[in-house]
Amino acid sequence: MTTFESLGLSAPLLSALAKNNYTAPTPIQEQAIGPIMDGRDIMAAAQTGTGKTAAFTLPILHRLQAAPKKVSSNQTRTLVLTPTRELASQIADNVEKYGSGLNLKYNLVFGGVKINPQMMKLRRGTDVLIATPGRLLDLYQQNAVKFNELETLVLDEADRMLDMGFIRDIKKIIALLPKKRQNLLFSATFSAEIRELAKNLVNDPVEVTVTPPNSTVDRIEQCLYPVDKNKKSALLVHLIKEKKHTQTLVFCRTKHGANRLTTTLNKKGITAAAIHGNKSQNVRTRALADFKDNQIQVLVATDIAARGIDIAQLPFVVNFDLPNVAEDYVHRIGRTGRAGRSGLAISLVSMDEGKQLNDIERLIKLNIPRESVEGFKPSQQLGETDLSRAAKKPKKPKKPRNNSDRNRSENKPRSESKPRPNKSRSGNKPKPRRA
Ligand code: AMP
Image (cartoon, rainbow, N blue to C red):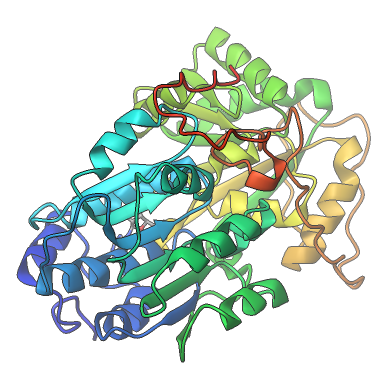
């Protein structure tokens, strides 16, 4: 059996892993850590929940520590690019957790917050810089970050970055980097677009695939409750109270829906908070921390806000509304049953969601078992999905647009953002966030 010791990780890393009760490497870690430690390029197909963050973080920290260097001012030895500030923060948390015994410098930069403190911190030089693409380019234009000493580039969740319209930013950033470097490309899936990007990026890569698409679904118990739309909140309250789950993540399709549901739950004595694109970063961080500490029982989230939320052992996910894009269902329920643990995902489905249900059931090739609760039976039958009909090709997520959750400054691709002044903006007040 492969162990972290047998992979050759250094003693401080092994002790950090032991402290965090990581007993054995996950499959992606087993396959990726060795080649990355050897300096190879990697193309890895791995979803959130597989342990992919540690799969690149651990060998990077190992290599940095094995060849310590004084990094010059504003330079960084490693750059990790990721699409959202939530993911960026989680990677930074991981880096700090695993690297606590190492004498390395980490930095985290993303948009939507003041740029000046980030510029100050970059001055001392960085071993691992975790960044969202738009803010990184802003910092580069202001000479706050330089790449002459860069050794390793990680593109994390590359498919999401492309979906979110970051391709031009990514290409610009890659063009700024030294030619000789190690490249680690992580993506949930390897579409033609990702392969095209990879062609000009990775050099003789080791290819690693750990989860065939959608296979996470297999280890998650799923069920659905056909219910009238106006009874969904009451049914949810009933289920939460009955099942006595402490940490429940509830998905809503819209921000208003998430707010409304949060208010209803709180009125019924269930502590809940909403996270979505209209909430400030501080409010979201706080809500997530309270949820992790069991201070609040329910986190109500929209798809974008929830993307990449990292909560170990999340036992219970509820789809209050079904997502419009069937693949989002798989992403949503993938929040539960992580790192080999089992979880329960339930969906409350009203008559008007029949089409979404058909798309989902064809995608996962399963008729989700149906349940009912006395007093919440629907007034009309919800039709069965004919699985023999092929699943429709999943729609591409929409491009960011105004008033959507994606319209957040750190996630906004440069091509979509307002023209920026060329002059240095240091000293300028940051743009007010959309509240
Ligand atoms: P990730 O796929 O990187 O988002 O990681 C998913 C979750 O699994 C995170 O909460 C990690 O802390 C946890 N994790 C990663 N590797 C291991 C491991 N080898 N043993 C136990 N938990 C792990």
